[in-house]
Length: 174
Image: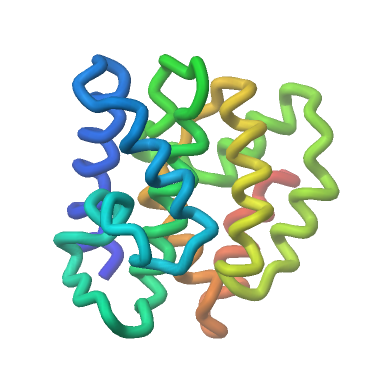
């Protein structure tokens, strides 16, 4: 499932970013993704065009964990690339824990937010903390692979892998 999702999501994120950075797409695409972040998964067709369509999304039913994670990840990318940010904020291979470490190295006090994120037991619980972190990453020009973040969010919602995600994210303290 992970490789299939990465194969699907990474080109979409790259296309969205390239279009934004070179002016091919309007800011409306990113605005739709940002506005959809706090809405139910799949409820905005304009956002679903980027974050769900083509990944075996069938709509009109409860979203799978992967669909929900993709919905969040694309919305988080839109927040990350927001404003006068003309540097690429999606960079393939940039893991969340590495971005957190870079953020901590800026002197930004992220300990409390980071600990709340580590205590989240589901992606729905983690999403607001991820959004606050993404806004800080934007301010400091720190990129991220949002497709890998989606996979982390999926694993966060599974009892058999939540500890793996916490361990991976916990490497910030190393």
